[in-house]
Length: 335
Image 1 (cartoon, rainbow, N blue to C red):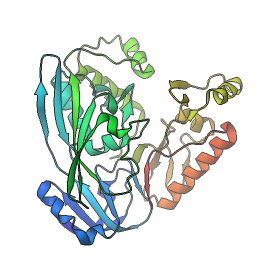
Image 2: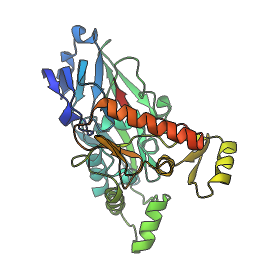
Image 3: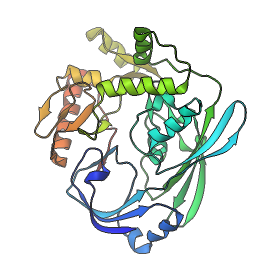
Image 4: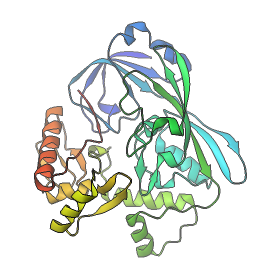
């Protein structure tokens, strides 16, 4: 279906009022024909769950291509592994629960991550010691310009921290479905400190992926705001990676600074940096940083794009001034 002057507020988790000139809803392959040459001559944006998207302006002068295809299917299975396809319009957490209910290991630590399946390949989502790339096999895409279907293998996507080659697309390529490989063999990933602490504190014996799903969901819900109640896009900034020599200097001045090993240097906790600069729980107009998680910017109601950009820039500058570390936005800013 094609809609004119469509209000995007219910389609973005930050809850911003923005109107798209045109919205094209794609529910099946036949709907791809709606994306004709006239639409391709103008600006186009692919949208899934809207959980990582900030519409800065009140009007988007272009076309929103809304991916709503559904389906989860088992492609191959043996005693040790299962391979499944999940279509891009599926809610990611539904896929995680689908796997956990069947005792398939591999994505349980990614429970309660907001958004749809299509975005997980774009963003290489990661949480609580797991990343999508660990279970990702391939994805199928469709290019409406040349009407070509293409399969990308894991190695083709150049996965990195919150990154794949789809992150900054220069042309339209719709991720149609994602193929995952899960394990039937028990593989518990409890490397993340919050999980370790909770297991020890409550004396939990993890014996199934569903138990891990529930534990991760409990931990997330305890400190992360529900976007249905308080508009947000999850983590607003990436955890910055600094050179080891820079980290050693920071460690001298801030002995308690948290960090994680990274192939490219030392990864710092952006939330800690932001909190040290006094932003945790601080509100500026209609926006602010959450009082339980300094990494999450929230919409207190009727937030405007200008307020979001100004607060983000003030935070970036304060972290540079205090730590000489530049934060990079994780959210997708649509101007």
